[in-house]
Image (cartoon, rainbow, N blue to C red; front, side):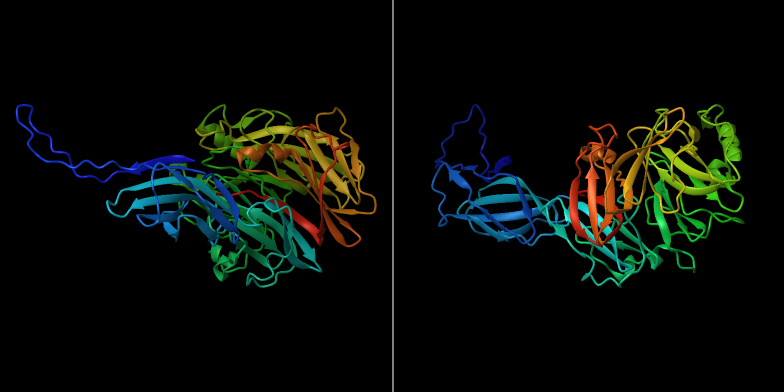
Length: 518
């Protein structure tokens, strides 16, 4: 129990001069001061029953002479306290929205108006407050399940009765807490389009539809949403669109790529906490080359320069603004060209300690497989990043078995220079620092087919070490199975790791962990 205090409302004392005689008549009253105990911080579920019986010592605090009051105050909102009971003992069915509250207990003496008050914290959770969001395809329909960290149970089809139209072709489930409406930070991406979902129970409103976030006439259907600096970028079809968020909720504009089509991936720095003039990475599929995109280059403060440029040109722009700070590293000499982009993923792995996480790009040249690790920084360089671009890694992975198979799934660790890929029932690891990188079997799931492979990038500090855990979704006899393999202690070697296993899903397409946001 904390913040115990009392407010005494008494008559003012009359201070007499030292040379004057006090001839007044006074009546002195001894006040009972309560000592309140038996109240502890509370963590409860919505619609559960909360019973608290405070122990009060120090006098006669009968209900004939005293009033009692219980109030709650939402710590994350500007609002007045809400009275939930006027009884000495609290018997309350929790009808509060999930969140962090202060619970106040107040005792008031009726005759004098004197009151004493104490407070404890009250955390209200629902079964959907924290846990794994598991996006499934049920005969092509987008179905979202939730493995609740709060109750330990799986909640199936949480969108079924939220009023949202049925959507086909599930792609991704994403959390963009810092670049969208705080009341609806989750995005469901499907072949039919995209929509936001509410923070408490994935509630839905028509205005959550992605169309309300676009300033173009065409319907935008994003493959993923990548954020950095003051904005976020999507690829819809074969065009990239940018949305600036600088203290306001911006809208996605027209395509930023002019005269060429882009692959369905966007590279960005997902490591640095503070990026201003963010650099994004696109892949030009027509001319088969990387393109750098810096939206803020268009501003007058940065000279109104070309915002989309070839990598060498963007490096020259950066050098012109700050010589010696344009390009970091020399893992490869020339920016690659004339290859097909197979996959791209952003990680927090930072080999140069420049606060520039590696973006891995898997490129195909005939039957040859090449992996590039590119670091993306900040054109202004006075925040976390002191460089604009980085040549962080190159490896020839052509010797890895089936690595370019059309059904292969890929994932890259933020812990070490490891790549993982899955095909059918087997997960392989590639040590990217080996002289001749080759695949090694991590584990197999006999009789199953792996449908999802990834590392979840956590946001809260207490969860950061779990960002190294490998997340695997598989299909067994028509039923989806989710496994989470611990990565920090194992050093990224999952051969002998026993996973946490959850069953009862449809075909798993994507998984993201919903962290508590209060």
